[in-house]
Image (cartoon, rainbow, N blue to C red; front, side, top):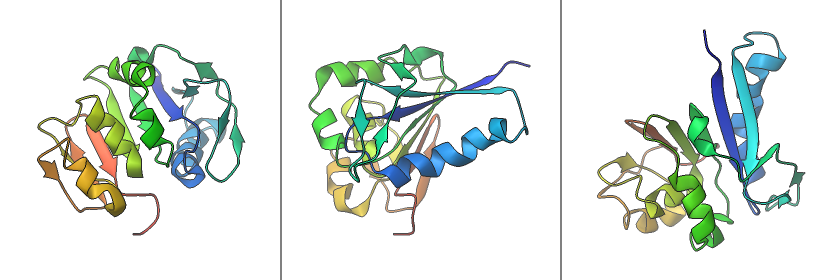
Length: 160
């Protein structure tokens, strides 16, 4: 059996809870001995990442090839708005193949919209940016979680 490979994408001004909410339980699958068939990397486009709350997170991979992962998880945060204008960062995300399951939390859905991965897909995001999401998909839904093919979008990690 081959390993399941997960990339956690981090960036400046991410929301710590959006990252940790996925990272903690998924990495415990391996660290608590439930399965050795899981590999994960904390991937960033920069060598230093500071969350919006001030927590510094050290990536294990920088500008690495994202095409080899089975799952890519992108947390939300106010840093998304700057990344939406960063062509190099967007190209880095764009190489994620259609066979990869991509999960976003909160504002991060907008990144998938900008790179065209939400065309023809249903998606959700934080209510504060729902109108922005509608620029990228005709199927923006006010739901907590939306799954459509290889894309899973979540409004947020806490009840909203």
